[in-house]
Amino acid sequence: MAGVNTFASILEATGVPDYVGGWAAGLGSAALGALVLCYVGGVVSALACSTALLPIIIPIAIPLIVAGDVSAVALVAALAVSSTSSMSARSRRTVR
Image 1 (tube, rainbow, N blue to C red):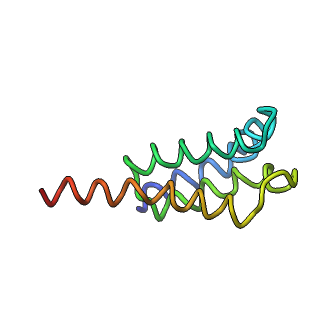
Image 2: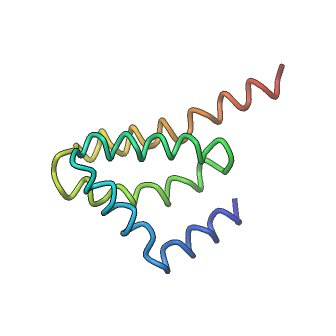
């Protein structure tokens, strides 16, 4: 988890969340941008700590929320679910 937090700090310092958030907001549809962010969150959480991923992925979603086309509560909930759902699948594979 410390490695992901360090990675998040580096991303923040270089402005990556603003750039990626602006890109996602510029896809033409806020729903499409939100879907892409949820997909990325799900894929990344399969490889990294889900708890540390949320502070990275939520700031990226801010341009979508500011645009007003997507509900803030719905988008944050969707990001949280997509970022943590692969963790339970990984746990099931370990138990078997």
